[in-house]
Length: 327
Image 1 (cartoon, rainbow, N blue to C red):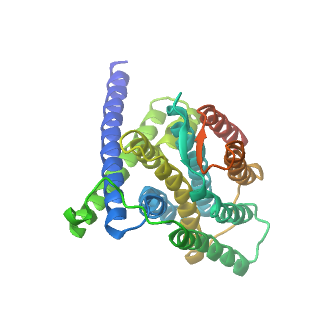
Image 2: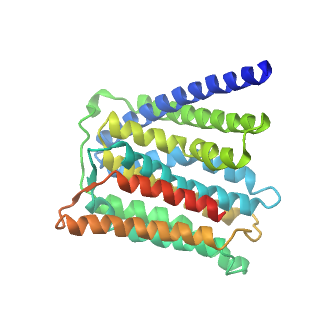
Image 3: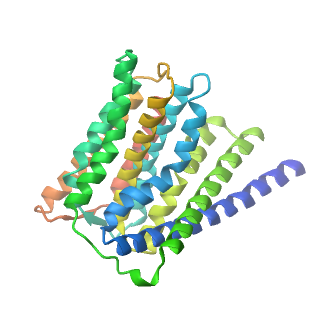
């Protein structure tokens, strides 16, 4: 009994350490990203879709490169991205909306509206790949190229359509390129270390008798999405940048799909052994989310700044529960 208590206590301390790493990494990343946006004279939403989204998606990239080489690697890789994208929307966005409580979560709908079609198309291509409708290797490689193209087109359109917004958080003349680079690199390292420690803790909890289903559906989900979760929390509460949260979530989902496309393009893949429900549920979630935003937009008499109620976050938590029931 004493041994079990000691192991549980050590896991608790490691979890606190991981949270500290994740918070500091997220803080550094957001701060450096805002300063980069100011220095390059680009919008904060664009920097969140690119720099922040790709930085928080790096753990998935490393997992996929290793997983795809193993037996049933395609299924594991597909499931990793599927679960990560679900977690980004339901846990990261859901938590962001829920934590606002009485103060509604507000963001600029125009930043989202004209480019959301690319998100939906990418989710559709990803779903088609996972449903094993097409067995032809050449066509599957073409789907991989399309998944990679989605992120490229999204960033290109956003860079053309989004007005320049100079961040008020930093004087671009006071920050050197070298300082920005090493801070971004350090933030990514801290996020990766923090998320990996949480994953290791989950494995330890399984070994000492905690339910595998509980650990898999809750602890690992939080672990793999922890960079996005902490980046969003820091962006909301420290920097008051809700638009960065939306850009991070959509950009991270597109980055994840692009990563899957990249990996499947260069590695031999077999059929994905996934049920029909999960890929369709992800596609339906992406579409439903846009319809919810559109409903708020119309209800708001087409004023671009949307104010989303906290109960939408609770609904997203419920959808995440349904997703794991469908697995």
